Length: 455
Image (cartoon, rainbow, N blue to C red; front, side, top):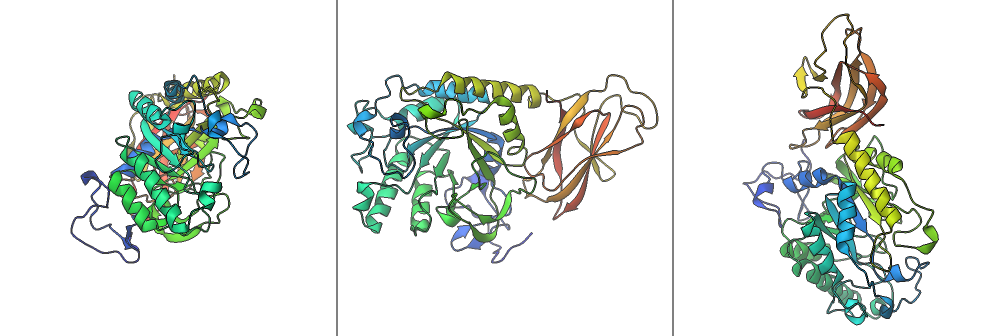
């Protein structure tokens, strides 16, 4: 597939990318950024992470009832999480099945969880006094979790109001330089678009500085326009529809932003959500507003199962700990996830046969005749080979049952597959599952297919 302004060049690498991400003829140059229809290895790795843990923690954790942009004062002297234990956060994240974790280093209120030289409103002027970002990063590495740092480019308060636009942009870059230059390798930078609607940052300057400090880092959000790698799905419900593709031509970055049209590019989406629906931060009035493991499974199947990542938020309390009820839900979801998708029903590996992709139970044979011991499945997981791009635009799944094996039953019809597609079907005992690609652009290929049973 080709796009406008494609330039065939000698081998080159994207600024900040490693040698493993070298792009050849698929390179597309647009306004100084590289927009690709073929994923880099970094993007393929990101999709393999699948589930992330989001931790909203900061000065707001000590002021229940406060809301974003409400302007209410939150004095730094209140910040004193006496039992702060980021290792507890990581234990819950690992139990949930997360492979990466993100913490709000600076939210819209401007409070910095590290001793920033560029503001008085930080941990250095609190009774706690310690560098929370350091504690978080160290806990991530001890838990072998990918490290993600959240930063809100926009903020409210007196400090911002007294700055010129140029001074504020320098402040933005200076703080990012502290975060990205002082904690070793950072895998993921999550830039929140809320509050930045209509702001005209120097996108190229900021992007270059980020990639200079952290070669290979992935950037979430469209605040930097063509500098981003990962896009927001457009809601905070942890779901997307059957029409989601890893290839995007329209990108939004906040609930107040309608999005913008862009050249088609391979840009996976991330679906973010909260364990407690009413607040991202810990809030004393939302004790009964907690989701459960069954609903989280639905979120997983409508995010990871639609070729996105799922980012689940929990708000540590003012002691610096996750609530036991939140931890219990995270553990229950992880157990449910492992019981359903951590093991496959006994079918062989996917194979190509007469234009179909097929998995078979050992008892399968053509013709009429009962097959004993056939498992019951209600989930089919399909993985497209997207190393050269996403190509499948339509597919059907058929099942052959226990007796009349020459009869094909249409189980499911879908549009995109991408990294992973989970087809939820009625519970059936099938000797064979067949996938037919009904529409594709470019050469389609399926790398894996498996059957599962969800209780």
